[in-house]
Length: 328
Image (cartoon, rainbow, N blue to C red; front, side, top):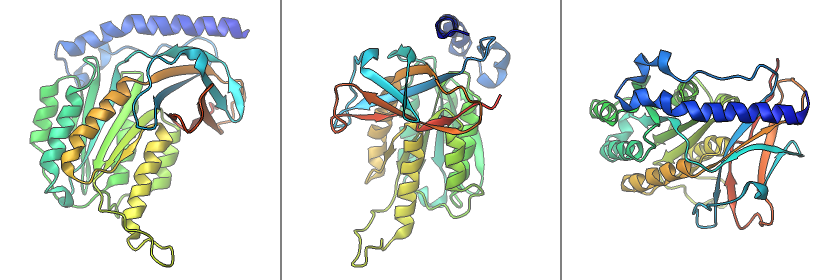
């Protein structure tokens, strides 16, 4: 099929999705629970030909981590495995998101949990009216505390009923949180994780999570309440390798997805951080392209987004690292 026809079909599908989205969201604004509203969610519209649109959400910030607005489509360049791709769809509009808040409820969070609860509620309140949220808590187990909802009161009630105790199953919570986010009704997905790290008991490993993230279009933002990382010693070894390990793990998880990792010195800083994350998600550029690589081999394809006329030192562009090609 000629590329021009493919582009026309994609554009028609995109505008149909945009047209119907407000009607899908209306049920939630009337207070209906997402768990009871599956039949009314916007269905997945698929073009009746093998056209695979790669969707990206990119954050563009300056040296001071301030969002750079009003960048034109012509300034963006998308490269897949070293080959430049043609951008078919582009938008800088705030689109609704399916988002999860994943909270560490292990015993070590006892002195921080009130700040964390208030910050989680602040994050939900900063969302788009058409967003949907779910809440996960983890310690010895990973529990869905609140299913998808647009009702802030339901999130608030779930936060009021949490209990802090036990160990830290961080990796399990991230893995299952990503799985849950993928089931959301919105085309854009995100996860915010607040933890003090120190995971020694999860079933899933960091390697499992990275593989999972590469197959899922879910952005993950991590807030790590970790102890200070000590300076390197005389033999260039970290004297506290556990802290460094979980610091690097949170950075890896975030960077793989186009999110970001934050490490506040005090729990009181979390509220300001979640407000920054909420603005970041709202202000992203959405980019879509059809890969010039037509092989359906299931291989991982690396993606890089660049800005023409900008030096790499001038801006930072956060986006997911790539995707797995289809197999059928």
